[in-house]
Length: 262
Length: 283
Image (cartoon, rainbow over the protein chains, first blue to last red):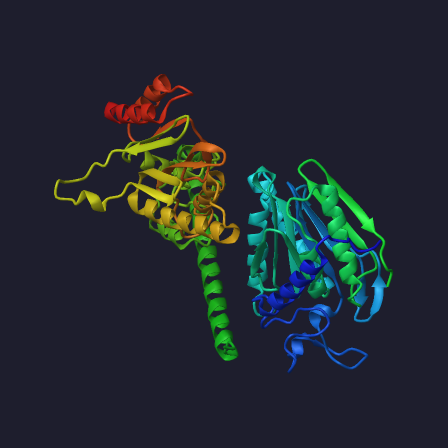
């Protein structure tokens, strides 16, 4: 599958450059060690977050398993996609690892970062949501769920879960809602797309150039798939295909992508 | 802070001593009473008390010091305990004990306290809820602005009470805190049902813990949320009911009869206010 050829390629490249510059100043990244490949703090990683690789140079704990996540907003629909690799540093262990979970029919949660924390956090959140459903006899709205995740992450402020969640859902009147947050719960709402994981730098660039507002579900699927596959190609820790959910008010379509299997 | 082993041993020793002393005392009493009973059985007066032979003249040993003290101070007359008649009142001083008829008598007393409080009522209208009570002050010298009988729990939930004012203040404080905790967690205003459930849980806690008494208030919680206008009554026992219209306190039967006659499902808010005032005037 080739890249989508856009009419204004030059303009889009410029936008991609701008988005990278913006990324360097983003509050999410200052002081916290998650990014693709290299840490933004070159001097010294603290012991809790340093992992020694066979190659020698230390990795961040957020890069131990590898992941790539995107969520995008379309016209009365949203799409959420992830890669499928589970690795232990540089060795691939599984190629069908689930990173996106359904909380309820109109709410999806993607968790990137350390796989064990992602699974535990998911179990805790599902527990809270089930109790909420029993007590209040209704499903949680995506905004409410995002606040819950943020509180739960902040509870562990001084011994955090090493995950970056991506939350996507349909809120009141089926208005799409997406947000991401850092590992201690700082919410970042967006109107267009959010990305997370080791491939986030390339994901930002790809999404910025490929995104258009108000896309229909089919076009949204094409866009998000292209953005995901082209970005994970530039990241050694994520890849091995893709897993895409496109959700409208009436249906959920789950698709598996086959990209470069490496 | 590690416990001092010598001290704990000494305390333990003391406690053991106390235990043995106590056991000895009780054994002595038992013996004395049995011999008395035996003596009575042989004497002529035993015909008046045929059941004296095998009855226990003491309550089972229990840990509540209040109960034990009361038992010791009761005059030791010849008449035995008639459990079936005096049974309920025997259990009326302890909250955490069921009476033989299956009631928690303290809660009944709490409801009596509520029933002697100032009348309060609530009416659910089509697009809102009205709660009302009369602010009857003990004297004209009281500053009426300082007395607040109707309070806000959240910007869209209010509450009125019948019964003891100070208990009401404590409950309002706890409920407000719970509503705020919910908001802090979910950034959403708490639904009325959830707040009522949590308040009722607090009130129920006080009917099952040691050393506390039930709240002497019944609350009427009125709120408006995604499910429309709602009115709940919460009792000292912790049970809650949803009402279309309800009254509590003095003259509750008159007020309820009046409300039954005047209530319609599609009342406007203004009509509901009018009806509330009329009902209060009835009493």
